[in-house]
Length: 117
Image (cartoon, rainbow, N blue to C red; front, top):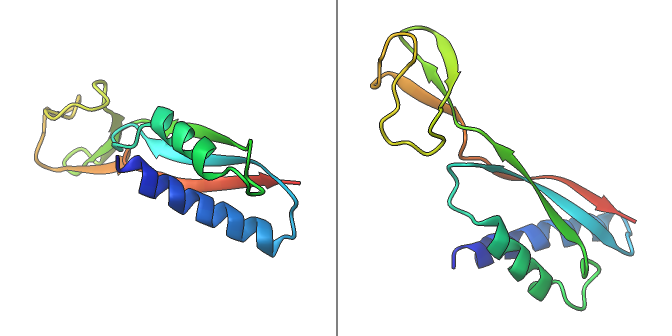
């Protein structure tokens, strides 16, 4: 159910952008979403279709760009992609370290662009 407040925020951002740019229609909103983020695009699309009724965003698309999980190993000083995408037991493929890892990608959630007309 946490998708509804997130989707409402997306709509607020898009409507504000459309208003500032005197747009008559929002065509689409591109969302950057890391694979570790808990938001479900399917539910966000359903909510977006519902909450945009009667607005300039009605019939607009939510387009999702998925970001992979990428860690940075402090010991090796190298980034690596997590092969499990959502794994809890992540280890560096170079040195097998699992305590000196920093997440650098995979939890993103942001409005990346808005297409208006």
